[in-house]
Image 1: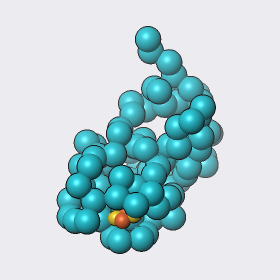
Image 2 (image 1 turned 90 degrees about the vertical axis):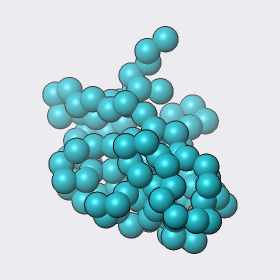
Image 3 (image 1 turned 45 degrees about the horizontal axis):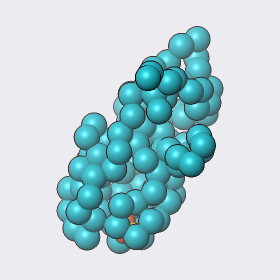
Image 4 (image 1 turned 120 degrees about the horizontal axis):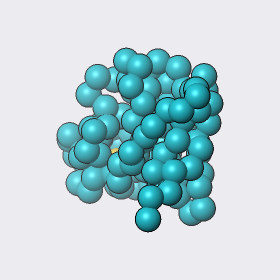
Length: 102
Ligand code: FES
């Protein structure tokens, strides 16, 4: 079943910024890369660092703890030590509000 939940206002995630929010037991990360919003799980698959304190670049989101970089399109780690992909979510923007399909 499709379930879109409001994450935040679009103004909360400016270009180059990260934003974390929780929905039920999910911890989700929003990332604005060059004006496009991506949503992934927020907890690193390696040792559970919070990626909202990571570094966003063209390569993706870099974990602040052991520096694996995850692709924002598919969640795949680009380098060790992380091996498992992050879950990714569909995103839509409606009336300047960001929604994530959970
Ligand atoms: Fe993220 Fe180790 S906790 S790479």
